[in-house]
Length: 173
Ligand code: FES
Image (tube, rainbow, N blue to C red; front, side, top):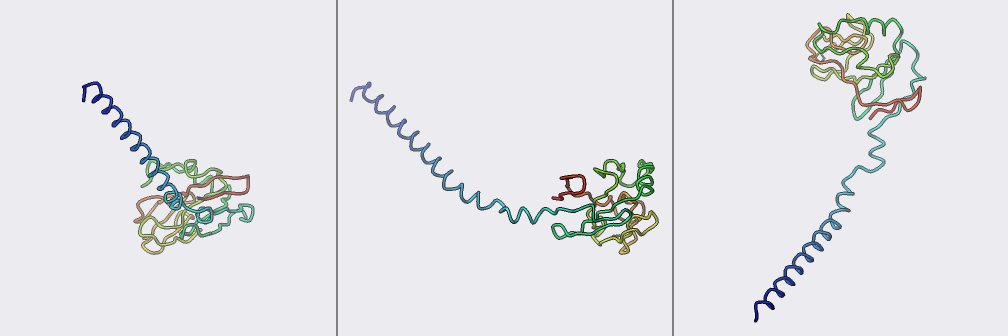
């Protein structure tokens, strides 16, 4: 075989290898796609992970508890006095310094995950030395912004991800 012929054969072989490699990759991706797609949460499951809350049902000064992803959510419709009290606190001395403005989207409504950040008990609303929440398990006191003020809990009550879908409705999740 001449050198010219050998080179031609080499080029043809490498083209065939490249083409079959590319086809193989396409086949793997197409075979894998239904599997990956199956692993995504269905619309039903996604809907269960979100909860819509009608704020108009909660009278001023009252709170409502709803379950979300197996945890209680506290939604408090705060009074003007509670809002003022939450806003006037000098946060530099708090165990977990957070301004009230950082914890609310609308100051009238505070949305919290109702799980004590110490060991996970459910605190009682409108209780404790700061008239927010009190966890009787080991004595953690939270204020009207859900911030830890006294007791063993290391951090403030957590704020879940949520958005206002209209003036009176929030969607949590
Ligand atoms: S679990 Fe709340 S104070 Fe310990």
